[in-house]
Amino acid sequence: MKLTIQRITALTPQDRLDLAKVWPQIDISQLEAGLSETHRVYAARFNDRLLAALQLEIRGTLGKIYHLNVREVTRRRGVGQYLLEDTMVQNSALADWWMADDGEDDQNVRAAFMQACGFRAQADGWVRSGAIYRAGLQRRCC
Image (cartoon, rainbow, N blue to C red; front, top):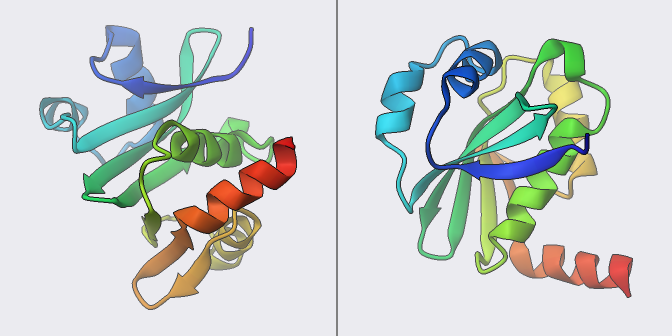
């Protein structure tokens, strides 16, 4: 099967189990109850299992990403980058992006990942201009 990035609007029992592995520190029931047009979850699905996920909060034209995490057994295969990039494509109306520096991983690894995804560091997280991102997509596909 192909890896797909999906906006999750309702969780199946299997989704709840998978997200508990992605985010062991988060109350999945509370997360599900808070889903809305401005508070979203996107996940990478492969063989009907969720391997990675992120939370997206939309404030006007700003996308704020929290808790991007890939299950340990799936890391270093491009899943996180694909999840991040496809989430941005699915929300291309957003002008700017900010990502919380809330990962538990080695900060050097996170910095390399964020820079590879076109983000730049600032005091409270990482930022990326949507205009720069859209221009990059045009260069890649045309």
